[in-house]
Length: 268
Image (tube, rainbow, N blue to C red; front, side, top):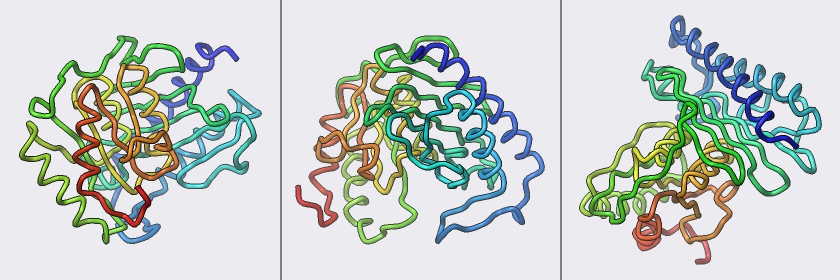
């Protein structure tokens, strides 16, 4: 497989869909909002964007399967290659006309990510990476922050929209980190949070109740930018495990703070 050629085609498909999302936002209204569950929003834009991506990516790599947020693909998971897609990561921001949302597309070969692309259409920023390559933002190589201590770090996180029984532990983590860092930001798009870690805008990111399409592309981009990614307990099941800590050199210290307060009935 020629990853560079595949990457170029993927970026073109993602950018095209990003332009569609941005154009639709100009005429979007509250009447277009649907609910998949409590605080879990979706719209025709998410669904149509996903259909566009599935069509384009199917033409690029016909043998690949799909793992998608909105479930519009007519094919399921394949044995070797699978695209992991979030057509609009940050839907709540999108429907409120808050310009912080993204498209996230990753390609997995068996159990390993080999390509990742995250596009933020409002700033026309494309973050991308391939296995064993560098990470880029709009053709410029990016690296994670050189900051080495939590005390100098700006972190990102996400507020959960379900699994509220774990909220007390989460609040304890936030309270602890607010006293040890330059601050925390909750932007509303896990994919972009990871992209911002990759280019050094954030030193670290943590969140629970995540889905594969939230993190698959971003995790690879962080790693290829020199960062590291694990679950809250340091394992590598961060794509399907529902929780993630990512960062530069501070990631292990960040993980220890999260782990200290965390409880979820899991066997640590």
